[in-house]
Length: 247
Ligand code: PEP
Image (tube, helix red, strand yellow):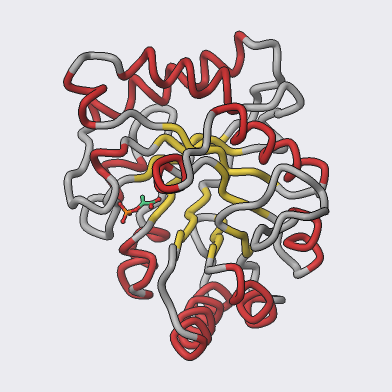
């Protein structure tokens, strides 16, 4: 299975910054034989611009969130169908920053993933425990609850991606070790299989302070199918090192 390296630009980047970063990465992707599928997830107003720049380069573009409904009176929200119409193929749902900042529950995340599937997008469904939950030894319980609650019944290894992002490792510079990462990835693959869904080909990304210097170790972990990268995705050289670190 090809690895997936996804850049989550979060709420960063002006038009000029996005243009430069996307053009730089599109040129890199075209020039060499990349070791992974590459995905860029800019802020929603930049999706069309970045999708245009990446067209023909092999780089995919995705959004950072979508609404649960296909359309309607939801001021400020974004319809999955429109994201697809703009040339995107993925959408991140249930990122811990959205769960924390917008009170998104597992049920809401699942409904967003279902909306993404209806629109023909691949949802990247994020799960991960907080520092307090980890300290209390609740990691596997939290992951089981989030996977069962957030992943649609119609999800398969072919139409969805799961990202394990321990909240304590996001944007903190704290990197999880192989001993933290491998068991959770194995658990997620197991939960997916047990649920009766077609788990073959399921990509489970790791996210949390991945950078060029630690990517090779993380990407070699059992069950890891790629990375969801925040901070380091804003630096084209470091992001490209992560792509090049795929086994
Ligand atoms: C993220 O936000 O998905 C993330 C993993 O961020 P960072 O790489 O900055 O920890």
